[in-house]
Image (cartoon, rainbow, N blue to C red; front, side):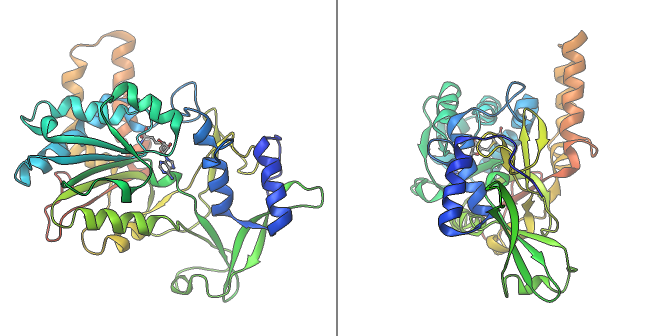
Length: 355
Ligand code: SAH
């Protein structure tokens, strides 16, 4: 299992904590790496784009935000055009998705005027990037802090994959938790601690050796979102993952290259696949079917939109545009690995694309 390859400031902080407390759950390791106030990955940098560590759908093409924006705007129309509403986003990155949503939303009379943009964002660096694209947004630290005085229409792209997960490994008839400890040379390493009774519901569909992940923060966030849209509003969630966690999906990416997850704490992005079954369970009936990203984008009309945009392009720009369309939709690229799900009011409706 992974050995420490780069000595980062966080490496020493984590080693001291583990010496004091003993091995820590994977979720604690991920939380420190991603959001440590001075050395955390998101705290210290803008990780997106070619010069960063990873690229996301809104950064690949404006068409992603346009399709989600049209779905949001139509959901707003379908719900009687509330005169004021919160246009919220969880983990907005550089603000690119919201900027595209607002641009396309201008085609729907009254939509942008009725919207108050609220961003849930932990990173000061990314808040600054978001402010250059959406200057009059309101920034909050958590879903609970989103104002409650208007219906919520919410977007979240690649937010839930950035939330820390715990990892459990099936033993013969019980579970052990995968933790981060120290080896004899004081290097970070993975170690198992008994976790009796951890996942009783998963003994029936797993084999000894299987790994199951659990995102402790997810149910609370989804329950809150479901409550906020119970009487009006909606949420569109897009992320990579699948129905029901199975297998080790925690990965580290630095400069677009995978590396061992313990290699450079705080200097690499850490993510895990999102368990859409856990979203559906927490949303308690206010949830659509899970669909692949490619299916959602096709239903919302990405191909005719791509053809229209292509008419103004030639040469390398046209090639890049065609590649972006393929990257977002094709099953061999993001089209199938990424999934989408929507939350809506009790009794519906869901936003277009999720019917
Ligand atoms: N949605 C954007 C960015 C995805 S990266 C896009 O598609 O390009 C993950 C985003 O979530 C970043 O903006 C990161 O700072 C934010 N984030 C991660 N953990 C968070 C947390 N616990 N609370 C709030 N924001 C968080």
